[in-house]
Length: 288
Ligand SMILES: C[S@@+](CC[C@H](N)C(=O)[O-])C[C@H]1O[C@@H](n2cnc3c(N)ncnc32)[C@H](O)[C@@H]1O
Image (cartoon, rainbow, N blue to C red):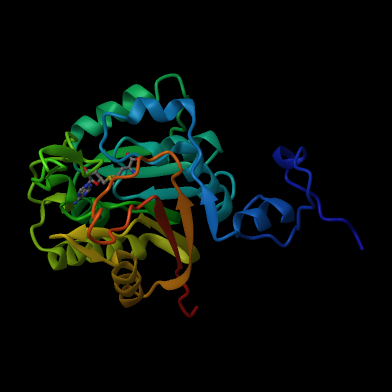
């Protein structure tokens, strides 16, 4: 039997490349490694240029996802692109990306951080409400990776401190961090959690219609607290994505080792410190 030939750019990969591979450009070993249900988040120099955004992805983490779910020259969509990390990560490994964000300042941030990176002409950063922009986007994409605002947690008025016998304990990593915008269309500005879920569902329904059949989408989000109550956000996201038609494919836990620990409930009650994000992946599988 003839040995399958690797694409040229993969010739330095150590494992065997299977020519039947329709998903990505990875050899078998690299593919297998990325199916592990936890990854450690990886930082790199370029992450620093995004730090004026309240919640940027780490470029390396997104490169890994894109390399698992696409082949070279394919197109990725991120409807909440913020500082443009997804466009940069896609570009680093030869993929195009359409990124959308409401906030014009984040586009400027992206333009600054991508200076000198030779971004593919086919990539675009579109400023606008994804709920409107997606209606007018006349193209199909090969993969979606995105992270919406975490409801209104950046608007949490608590200064993140608690007085304990005259001592102030810092209670939150969010203290002093800006929220995204004042726009009523910003998902981070919706008062009710149910409204946030509905608005996210509406945008993801439109994104679903742009995704090619048999392709994948990854939502990056962690659980969080609303009015001091822990919410299993992951469960709600899976439910709404399934209602749209997406098939749940699995959750990768992205471990964030460098975050500080806060004594939220100590010494009276157990309160979790969220030191991971959930990378929740879905597939579009429609009858042909
Ligand atoms: C969690 S952040 C995404 C950060 C991004 N992954 C990065 O690496 O910088 C969510 C983003 O959603 C944007 N956003 C909120 N509502 C939106 C809407 N309706 N349409 C487009 N973008 C929106 C916010 O401006 C914010 O930048």
